Amino acid sequence: MMKIGVIADDLTGATDIASFLVANGLPTVQMNGVPVEDAPAACEAVVIGLKTRSCPAPDAIALSLSALSWLQEQGCRQIYFKYCSTFDSTAQGNIGPVTRALMTALDTPFTVFSPALPVNGRTVYQGYLFVMDQLLAESGMRHHPLNPMSDSYLPRLVEGQATGRCGVVSAQTLDQGAAATRAALQRLQDEGYSWAVLDALNERHLEIQGEALRDLTLVTGGSGLAIGLARQWARAGASADSAASGYPQPGRAVVLSGSCSEMTNRQVGHYAQLAPAQAVEVALCLKDREAYASELAAWALAQTSELAPIIYATASAQALKEIQAQFGAARASEAVEALFASLAVKLAEGEFRRFIVAGGETAGVVCQQLGITGFHIGPTISPGVPWVKALNQPVSLALKSGNFGDEAFFSRAQQEFPV
Ligand code: ADP
Image (cartoon, rainbow, N blue to C red):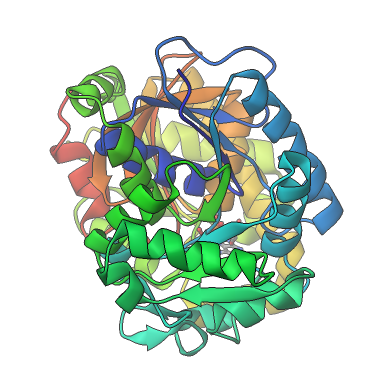
């Protein structure tokens, strides 16, 4: 029986929630885009990874509704709209409009927003979202290139994006347990609220959320709420089975890094001291991309080191600014994405079977170009970043969104999961 159907607004976000579902006992597969075929047998949750975080709202709504139809056909009893734990969206952003459209399609008058992921430092208190020890709008997210976050108070963000009123269920209420939380949600609904933001400071709060929301038709959140919901349905041995079926494919590994986040800069700096490293030159991506990709693929193939070679476009904030001033921001990033897409194909045609990819957009283009339809979810490398094995070809990937993972992520992904 299909318990939960997830609509995720980007690829690495989809992998993130899928990893928490399996780690907490719910057999799960991930599909990239709205599938044409049925879900593989034996899974009890499906995550559909879309690319709807930053596109125009009408496009995000249309794609999300088409994902919803497919999930309903699969018999999912609960729908979960997954977005980033930093609530990435602008005032014109898509979280409110997509949520509203899903509520209308499901004919449900009320749902929740629960972005917290305490294990990665994302907590919500009295409706305010924190990133580690800073309010969201005072964290690095205020400089995000696509969705700069300038408000930390979630009810205001939600009410700015869609019509309706949004209340808060506080940490104090959650401390009183699932019944008190359910009662608070009912009160808000009776008073005419469409939504409630849920506080969460720790995993216990997520468990209480899961218990209180187990029968709600629609929930929305980051991947933390999935911990609580999956535990409601947990099946003994499911995590170990999944980790085994998604265990990384034997074969050579390569690291491709197209993220410029602070964490990725640290990870690349650390890894470049341990393994052969090649920096991508944006000018060459713009000049003759195919020839340049072939040259980089040949370089990777020629390396004989124990740790995988890394090819990275990762640049510091200052260097990125200069590149963008020279070539134009959109042109430069498109050129870099296109290079990684064509490089991934050339590497897969060679001996490479394990791809460690940093960057959400970068991971998206790599998977698209390799024609990967979906994943078995394997063992977790860092919270929210598992190894995944392609459903339709002999390739494994570790897809890391910019800010995830620790400094040694790239080497740990290999050394902790030997062939
Ligand atoms: P993150 O998960 O950190 O947001 P993404 O891959 O989603 O990473 O986004 C990073 C964007 O920056 C991509 O479009 C990528 O092509 C672009 N980019 C990466 N390196 C460079 C560079 N050196 N110059 C210009 N753009 C770059």
